[in-house]
Amino acid sequence: MTPEFLVTHSGGFHADELLSSVILTRLFPQAQIVRSRDRQWITPAEDRVIYDVGGAYDPEARVFDHHQRGAPTREDGQPYSSFGLVWKHFGRDYLAASGVPEAHVETVHASFDGSFVLPVDLVDNGALSPSAAGPLAGLTLTALLETLKPVFDETDPEAETRTFHEALAIARAFVEARVARSAAKLRAEGLVQAAIEEAGEGRVLVLPMGMPFRPAVIKAGADHLLFVVTPRGEGDWTLGGIRLHDEGFELRADLPAAWAGLTNGELEAVSGVKGASFCHNGRFIAAAKSREAIMAMAEIAVREALAAGAA
Image 1 (tube, rainbow, N blue to C red):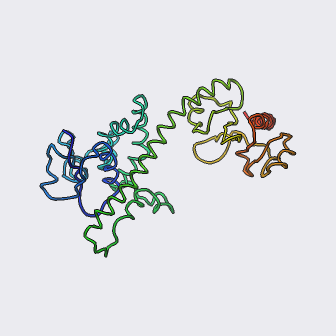
Image 2: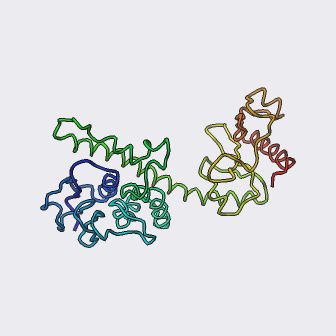
Image 3: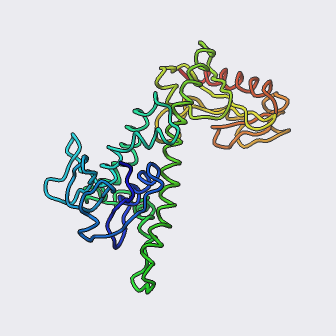
C-alpha cells in the first residue's frame, strides 16, 4: 500500500531525517510528513513509513529507526542512521525514479552510499566527529543543515515545522545534484572510452565536450595520454593536463613554461600558433580560438613534455 504519511520525530531536526525525507518524498510525493513522537503516530500501520523514531528497525513494517539497543549496522560494523536505512531499502527506487538508467543503478547506489550516506550515518551516531574536517567542520553538510534550525528564543510555534521544510528543500538540492553528478560520470565513461580508442597510441585525448574524464582514463589504463582537448563554447577550445592523483594538482605533464601567463598576441608569438589565446600561469590549461590552433598547441606541448622526460 502506498503510504499516506511519512512519520519522523518532532523537535530539533538533523541531517539524517532530513535526507531520509528527501528520498521518501520523491517516491511518495502525495504523502504528508508528520513530525511527532506521539505513540499513535510512531506505531506501525499500513498507511505510513516511520523513520528516525519508533524504536525499531523492521523493514516489513516500514519502521527505520537506529536509536534502540541492537540497532542495525553495516556488514563492516559501521552504524546506520535513519538515512542509511532508508537509502538501503529505498535508494534504488529513488535512483530509478530520478531517471538513472537501470544498468547504472547499482553502481550509483553504492557510490552514493559510500561517499554521501555513510558520512552522515557516522556523524549522526557519534562515530565520526565533524572536527575531522578541521577548519571546514562548520561547513560540512550536516553542520550547515542544522544551522537552519530555529534559534533558542524563537517564539513562533510553527518555527520548527517551517524551518524543517525550508531545510528539506536545501537538502533535496544537494542529494539531487550529487546523484546527477554520479550518473553523469557513468555516462561520460562511455564517451571517454570511445575517445581513448580513437586516440590510439597518441598522447592527446580529444573529447566532444567538457566532461569528467580521469576515472575512465585510469580505468582504461591509458597511461600514455598526457593532455586533453575539449571544445568550450562557440569557436573556443581548451588544452588541459591530466592529474597524476585523485588529490592534488600534480600533472602527468605541464604545458610549456614559455606559455605561462600569456594571452592573445604574446602567446601567439611565443608559441608560433595563430589563434592561441590563453595559458594559465599554473600551466595546467590553455585555450585557442579554433580546433586547428588547439591541436597545434597540443602537438607542441607533447613534444616538449616528451623532451623533458614525460612517460
